Image 1 (cartoon, rainbow, N blue to C red):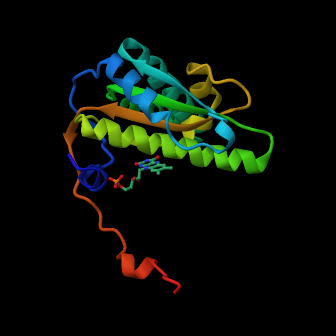
Image 2: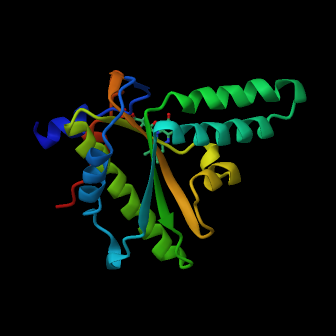
Length: 186
Ligand SMILES: Cc1cc2nc3c(=O)[nH]c(=O)nc-3n(C[C@H](O)[C@H](O)[C@H](O)COP(=O)(O)O)c2cc1C
């Protein structure tokens, strides 16, 4: 596949086949992804891959978070169950975790570099028929979710990537025309 086709053909995937993704494949994709540009070679990232039965730990953390967030006591259980259901069907999670540098300028550059890494991963995965969605739902900031992933103080979850073989590839949403975006200065 041409790189242009991978970039344009990649979609965020929400529905996955019930087929596990081999851990070796993901490890290989992550290794290649780490060749992302990063200023001063900070390489601020690390990863936690959650698959198999461990996924329930994340789903339960989400249940606790969602139930805790619901103000109406009668709706707590239902809210928790919704959270659990959202996560329990995901074949694999790749949590991309970034060290939060105390210097805001370095931190911003590290976030940019980590985002570049995630895009690398997304395109490499797509090339192999593996889909993902980059999720930044509220749980990633919660104690429940962070504890389930053993995220340390001073670390940020940049993305919870839901990874698997696509069951449904959504229709692309159009992008702005390049003429609207580009200024050329002669
Ligand atoms: C930083 C970032 C965070 C995102 N967080 C979410 C999210 O929490 N939930 C979600 O459904 N999609 C999320 N997305 C995916 C976007 O919604 C998606 O990329 C956009 O709709 C364009 O669709 P496409 O990726 O299929 O081209 C996120 C994307 C980025 C770059």
